[in-house]
Structures are given as structure tokens and as C-alpha cells.
Image (cartoon, rainbow, N blue to C red):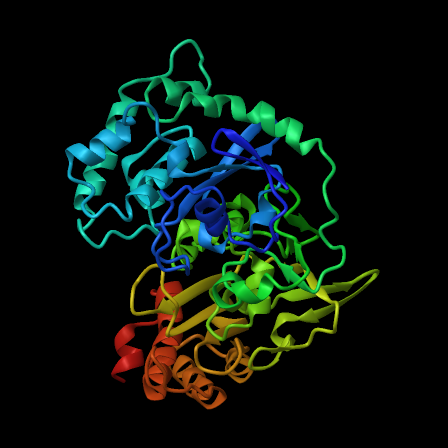
Length: 472
């Protein structure tokens, strides 16, 4: 593998499943990137990964504990050491002036993420910059001082416009926000990317896409296996619309789905729904196919695409077959997938003009948390009558569940409180929740009923009232 780490070209033959975090700290002795939770939750190990998209380089902030180093081939990795200059950068100075760091363990993650925001955008906004730091946790400051440091730096940038049409990298370097060497990285990456690459599907016993789950659970096991890395970003054909059907490649990241203009037009509110999925570093790595094949009973993406009545395309060498997503799950972590098959695409029929979609999720934290119960609905109503309904539910069965009976009951019914309550009652008979750390079985039953009610209150407030559902 050949890639750039900060300003140095790295040649290494370490096992490709080695986490980027371990390589940075142990092989390169760069200890500024911290090992915290090793689950992608704390942000202490955040780094930036840059890759060429046309003639420009695009950077994304990721949790290095969940990234296999094999994915770094031909890319640029920036750690906190790669952002330091002979003097403190503008943002580092603001962190000092505002008391934005105490123990200092989380500080590199915040600085790296803020730098990622500057590199990923052309216009700068205080709220967007603060939101970009999501996934970084400080247990000392309460985050208020860090927010003030962000505010000060954004105000400084916006009061110092570019001169003489200078490009973004030169502009940020002149303002003492990134090191000067970064502006030369695109040309070096171009030369690296012209080199021959290994066939990613040759001689594998384990296939890894984003790695956000498997590198938490089985990272040590992977180091003993032949692996294939199929993670890929920046493909303009990841999401396509043709003849009323939307097709999404399985390697598409949650970030790419969240930012897709086509999908946000098809599903209004999608960006808001996916804000509940996880932090930006996780969304930059997590893939749709990975989320679906992980088969978690509470997977958010699976939940959404079940309600879209999606199909998946399974490929093995030159053969492929198509099945409904709702038929993919046969039992807990048991899939209708033959040996050697991989999900290549997910597709669904674009909802009609009378259709509406909603996603609801309850978790102990509002953001960046796993659901206790989640639910999605796609419903089409015309002249007060329900034409089609697809409802999914998570956290209430061993599998991501399509509520077949409740959905069938609603189809053809008048949209009113009685129909909704009866559908919720039918749904209660379809589920089999268990008590665990996220709540008792009875609590989860109650949550699902409330989420079904919430779908209709959100989508049809002019036709359904809360008191009709809860008190009548």
C-alpha cells in the first residue's frame, strides 16, 4: 500500500485489516490521535481522509479506530500532527483563549474535525461548523467553550475574504488555519493513483465495506484472514433514477444518501431522519449494504428501506437474483444469502405524488444513539382513503420487521382514528419484543404503538388529532 500520511509518502505491507488508529500510533508513533472508546463514539481518534474527485481533493472526517488501513491506498491521511505548524493555528489559539481544553484527551478530535469542516466547505456558517463537530465528546468543558472557539474562528474567516481568486487551500493556509503543504497534496495523489492497484475481490475469506461494526466486534479475528475491501466513495452513479425506479449501490455511504439531492426530493425530510442515524464520522464510513447485511433488528437504514418496499440485488460471480428486502431476514442474524453472494444494489419504486414518508426513533439520547424502537411508514392517501401502506418496525423482534398484517389492514381503509388504532392493535400481535438494556418488552410495545400514532399525527395533522388516538 502507498498513501500519504500528513506530508510523508508511506509504503507498507501490514495486514490490510489493521486499523488505521493502530498503524498511526504503533507503527508511526504519532500519539496525538487518541485511543478512546474504540467504537466510534467518542471522536478522540478522528482523522481526515482525502481522496481525489476529479481535479480536487475531498476530505472527510472519520474514526480511525474503525477504518482498515487497506482502504488508505492512494489517499491522504491527516492527523493532528499534520495540522500543526511552527505556531498555533487560528483555531488552536481560540481553543486556548476560550479554555476549550482541560485534560486535552479529546482536543485533537475537535481540532481535526473543525479543520475537516473548513476543507469540506466553501462557505462557512457557525451552526454548520458546530454541527460538523458531532461525534466528538468532551467530558471536561461542557462544550460551551469549544463552541465559542468555533464561533470566533468562523467570524475571523468570514471577515477575511479570499484575494485575487486564490483557491481554498491557499486561502486557508494564508489565514493560518491549515499547513501550507496541504495545497501540494492533490498533485502527489494523482501520481499515486496512476499506479496499479490490487484486485479488491481476489482471494478473500471476508468482505469488508465501511467497517463501522465489524471492526468493533471482530478486529482481532480479521487480522488472521484474507480480506477483501470494497469500500468506495465519490461514484457519481451510486444513486440513479430510471423509469420510476431508484437504484442505490450497496457501497453508498449514509453521508452520500443524506446529501443526495435526488433522494431528498423523493423523501422530503430524509436529511432530518438521518441526523438521528449517527455522527458524521460514522456516516462517512457506514454503507447501506453493510447496514442491511448486518441484520441488526434496530438498524435505522434497514428500517427506512423496508418501508420503501425495497428489493435487493444479490450477486455471485456472473449470476444475480432479486428479492424483497422484507424476505431477506429469516431469523436473528440469519439471511437468505447463498455462499459467495454479496448485495450489489438496493432499489425501490419512487413513491407517487400522493404518498408520504416518515421515520420515528426513540433512544436514550436523541442523537448518536442506538434505537430502543424505531419505525418507518410509506403511505398513499387519496380523497381520505388509504391506497397503500408499508410499515416497518425495529427493536421489537429478532429481525428488522415489516409489519405485514398492520400494513394490509390499513390498505383500503378510511384515514381516521379508528383505523389507526386498530392497525396499532394488529401490529402489537405481530411483534415479539424482549426486555434488555434498552427497555422492557412492555415498554417497547408501548413505544411502537406511540410511534405508529406519531406517523399519522406528523403526516396528516389536519385529519387526525392526538386526543382521538390517546383518549377516545
